[in-house]
Image: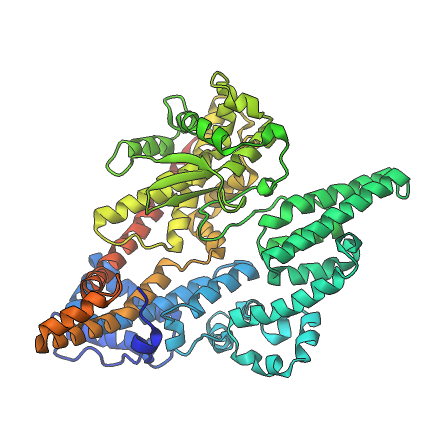
Amino acid sequence: MHIGKAAFFTAVLLLAGIFPAGAQHLTTREISLLDSCADNTGRKVFSPVKAGDCLKELAADNYNLLNRARASDPAGTAELLSGLEAIKDLDYVFSSTIPVDSLRAAVKVRLEADPCVLCAMQLGPQPDKLYPWVERYEKWRLRDALEAGLDWEYIPPQAASYLAARPSLRSGWPGFTISRREKALSIWATAELDRLLAHGAAGLDIDQNIETLRKMWPFLSEEQRGRVMAAIEGAGTAAAAARAQGERSARDSEAGAERLEKARTMLAGLSDEEAADYLAKAFDDGGSYGGQVRVGAGGGGLAPAASSGGYGADAALSDADALAVSTRLLTALTGPDGELAGTQIGRETMAFMAAPGGKINFALERLASPGIRGVFRPDKSEVRLNISDVETAMLRTGVTRAQLLDPADKEAMAKIARYVAPVFVHEYYGHQKQSVWAAKENIPDLYYLGQETESFSKGALFVLQKMEAEEAMGNAGYIHQIAKEDLKMALLLRDEGPAGVGRYVMYYNVNSRRGKAAENFALYGSIRAALAGRARAAAEDPAAEAARDAKRPAGSQTKDLEQRLGTFYPWYEAAGRKSEEDFRYFQAALRELDAKPGG
């Protein structure tokens, strides 16, 4: 369903005085409190501290005050919650020590949403409208905010020179959204790439143009990035020819070829900031890159860079191969002696398999991108791990195709199960259990960033518990038998808890729980007004309104709007409680690990 801003969400949140003195179920003190909370949004104070205090009061005693305020004025309370949650969510974004590319993604999600709560508060959609708030409340991040928002003074100098020659772009820049600025910068990046490759891909001097490539990378399309990698391939071929002709020392040639090979396998899956960082390390100082490959909202997992392709015959699986090993891999993961055994979260996962809604529909599948390690599809309740991740595991563990396809070779399958187990826990015990929870609560399974935080944390907790179990059995090499990114996430959970994991995964183009709540409640009054209008029309001419409703698309018919309206408050309270329960769950599990000898 799409309810346009023009139709329903056009007013600024001016909420002061929404709770009259005689409001049912509320004391005079509570009305005063709620009006002061409304002043924080309606009078454009936008204090995150005040917003947090108000939300804490509303949620106290199992949302006692919230439910009484809702009984007095459901639409006014929804507007109040929308503004308060939007401010608190914004503060969460800017108080987090996340890199600029993640900050840009997080800000863009919020400033270009529909409905855009921050826009109604005059804090967007242009990032320039947001900077005064950042300067007032999170001044230490102002420079990052300007860079993330692609402020003119912070875009690459080459891009500024190029775009300045186009007066409409330069003069219009302050009024552009982040997406519009990215589009303009892509025009520069395209022109610059054409210039660099004017003499063919093999003619690109990577060492000479590394800084330009780093600055261009975030604004190149997938096809253009492919051209860059083709140029790297060309450079690698040239380096090989140079070695053959003795034009460079063997040591220099081999080092250069190694850097080029790493570039080929790394760049396709990296985030913008990581790609730029990798290019610098690979070609500025010859260093190796061992960082994260991040995926978008559809992924629900991390991927090792080597999975971007280039497998030999011994590590390449067909779809038929994958189908043949899927059942055996599931057994190697969840069987009595499987990889999940010996850990508390593994036992919980296997118990969930026997619980209502826990039936597993599992298989390996060639997913759209090699950078996506796994997915859970709630519409089909199916868990899929990427064939390319299994191929990566084969390369890193030395398992051949023949060994993997041999039903008698349980050792080979166990190595693969070990490598993919954290992803399996993430997708199945994380995301599928979330879907089952939503159904049990009779609320929609809305996708928000907290679901990724929980799922990543579960995969990370499995690694920590497995590490402890393996060390107890004398296997000190466990950390070398799993993906480096899974180990890194586990250490992040251990050192910073689920809050640290939440900050780390903020690169997803997905709104947070608070942001999702702000959007939902921004629509509450609009949907309520629409339903009231339809009710009046039905009272005047029932047959005519019924005919009109029958022609409305699915999702926007009256029964659909009534159903959706009835989910906003229940979802908000249930999701809030779940967030607190998840935090306590991980804190207790981490304390238990810490209390053990050597913890």
